Image (cartoon, rainbow, N blue to C red; front, side):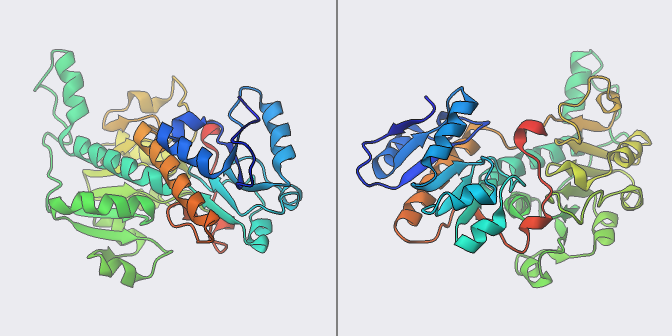
Length: 352
């Protein structure tokens, strides 16, 4: 019930849990929740009355040690929380509803749960790539229609991921999780990531490359970059036209990175195949032409949001709260970087 404290208020640090649009039982296994309740005075604001939860958050500000969730935190609200040491965002993005500079000035740790989604998304991306390589989902549809073996896929034949030329656009959490999954296929992997020095990539056996080269040399191209002020439609008509004939593109990160009109036009013309998990508008309108386009594997933002990822978030929150309460820095969630936070262009999960 919203606003109901857990524990007896015996001096333990107060932690507000307000993870909307998720609930605390989505994130925390019973034993993890019990451990948190033992170490901290939990103010659970996962009720069904948003107004009551908002009022309870306001009342808790003077004593709160940490906030788990992503409520609005303008500068004046941060100022009313003199004991606040950390904001632990469990939605996965650094959202624009928080005054990050006010937090940085106070030394408040602002953390996000993006790393928890990296492995699920990476595994899903690999699955999409294998589907594009061999036409798995298309063969399923053909079989159900009694047309198995009659419809060619990708120019009449599949391709191998083994020893393929692979490109990664972005090498953050997702790229670092996908890299070891690709290793058994022994591909050549080129990476475009302007936020990393080439030495970081070379140390991992990767080939740093400009965007044009990464696209032009890749039989499989994974789009893994987050949305920033600089990369809107990074892959537009010119860049997509560089892809070799029959290339496979997998998009699992953020929709604004790709010009969808240009992408769908290339797929419709038979120049490339694509698998898309994120869309500029979600849910995709029922009459959207992408739903009828051959050569396109469709997914509705399903790559990361699985129970294992949510429970990993809960464990990461527990671990970092315990460290913070012990006077140590957090190590599991992703910290907001002062140099980057103003460049993200992320939207909350409930409105994607």
